[in-house]
Image (cartoon, rainbow, N blue to C red; front, side, top):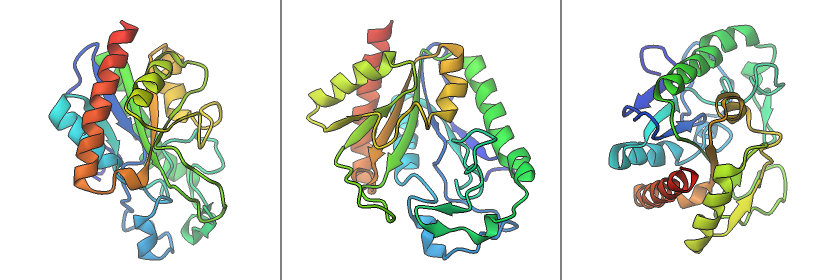
Length: 240
């Protein structure tokens, strides 16, 4: 975390331009919040969206798509959940128990992490009035707790507003990618940040879920940043 804040900004948004939001970009756990888990678990998808920070950073630095990134792990407080969601402070994730969250002071976690993150994001978006929001996440090819097949390279999620997603699906398919539509999750159920900051304000958005083993290295992250920057640029033009 930077200066105790649960977010950081890379670049400055251009009015009417494209911005990126990454709710699960960090695996940082403050020292005063003992989760009681094995340290290696912080490198897994239950703690962080692997590869997302690298892609978002490259999109910001190389393509001028300013980014709002979380700086705390989803295991401390899941910023991509509503305040009253039962997993906003998860007691378990993908079969792993999080002992330090059992009986945790949820109100304190919300006040310290969730509310400042979203208040800052709200102010940032209101100042920029972007033409398109990119919500960036990654998914694991295989959950530890299920045998579910996840064959997609990338997926688009949405709740009721699919204006941008429809264009992005077509452009990504043109790149030869296997594109999922509201997979492996449904945006009608898991869309908290975009429901709040995009759909509620009529702002178009692309909610991307990238297969994490496609963006683990710097070279992969650069490739995907370039491709996504091109795709969302074309989406923005199609929407204008």
